[in-house]
Length: 431
Image (cartoon, one colour):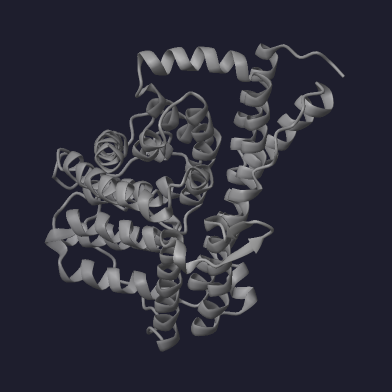
């Protein structure tokens, strides 16, 4: 065992994150394991409890969303969105982010909207609109919708932190839903300031690819998924829908977290049956792969960060408390940067929201700040940003330098507006 200095531990933590980020979300989880090996096995640090609660919720909701995609419900939803976009090409600037927002909110992952990026680009060209405008707003709408989706890993992480404080799923949605809608509208307005002319690239849109017709079971899968999500929201919002038992002299009611896991996991079989989804099809879905990577990421990186914070609790508390007392909304900036550096909204929420509670920030304030974790767009190296920047005109760009990309201005506008609106809504709700 070695007595590790705090500076060396921080260096190990940051180096492992940078190293693991090269492998994506799964790499962050493995990086967390490496950090724990150094801290616990090498430095004798007492490990914090693993984040089992949020991992179980993520696994349950990801299974339900994967059953939806495996049964074709996601394809049906995207087909409907594509039909709407092609019928109203001159409203693409508004309809594109609305489509990706709704699809992401229902499915819990932005990858379901990748198929729409090509459609948005083609329709924009046909309407004489620079594709950068609707595409950049559409990507930011995805980041905002992640924090609304009842089946996203980010929402599961936020629930795991706030449920013990009596804040339910429905109460969180009452704040985040209008806040992210306003934030997405701000992204649309910011994207509208970009130049409108088409770049001198080929402007003839390619004919749409032939796709298989929608089958009845794909529609049934979507409606089964919607019914499961509605039941989960109702169970979390209404105490009388959760059973209770006598434990000696006390009465114990089924917890919200356990109820969510039961409903989403149990509803998965119903969704798979309605959509005729096989186990192989479910396991091969992009939703399942990305969701389970998110669970592994939280397992490793959150466990490591909790362990590090537990060891230096006193020093961190004094420093961070002074900062938050002087600049209360500096914590929102920390959330934003953490989401960008960790490449994960859920990991940022699960790592830092408990710190916010420890610093004395009211739960209502944290709910209002939750949308600050949409900073995933800041460093556009993820698969979604790369796919979004692949329009044939070249107008939507990643940039030659780190921050000169098409998503920066709409993303910053959306974050500022959604955090401001969420803080106001939370104050009105819990004032």
